[in-house]
Image 1 (cartoon, rainbow, N blue to C red):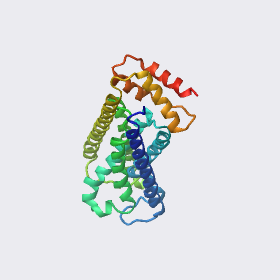
Image 2: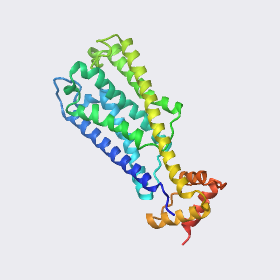
Image 3: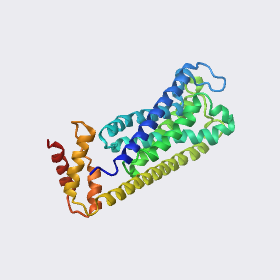
Image 4: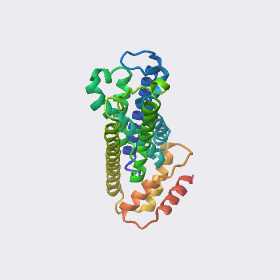
Length: 293
């Protein structure tokens, strides 16, 4: 008997791979456009100076974390077992928080001041719009193999806090005339610095909590859906036989000598079969059946 959730698992894996690849490609396009644009009458931080901008830094972080996801999605398509390490999911939450802040600041603060066409055109179409939106969708809908804990979520505040300190030092304490930065975001000269902090920091915390909520809800929904599939397929069945048949089916279908024991899947089957088998015993039976000629 085949794993009833394997098709759903592979679809999740495929969508995660596609979205991660698109984000990484769009980040490369957007950053490259900024690097090769030596002069822009509306934005003075082009060329190598583009790395001063939180927009660029946050998108690069997002692109790198999406690249971390790709090997696991490729392996998931190959083996039929899609699962991201917890640390990768946490890193993605950190990156998606940063680009979500970029998107919201661009949409609700910069666009009304400078114009929507200006803020969402050229390289900014990718860095202010496409990449953040795709990151949010991918993280909440397709990167859902780990429930984020509160203490893990709070790590997402670190990049914003670090950039805020650097920006404050370079703009306020050093200043452009002494080799620092000009206030290109207007957060220190157009409004009092404390106003910017009172807006940005609570906004970032709100983004962290909303992303955690959306991600965890989708994760629980996926687990609930898989549990229903297992309940319908394995209720009343002999679990030893089911696990052994699944191992033989995977070996035949995947045609690979690399063994990936689907421990989470076996745990779901035990939970929804009413059997008192220990998960470790289920994994052992899977491995033994897989290794048999």
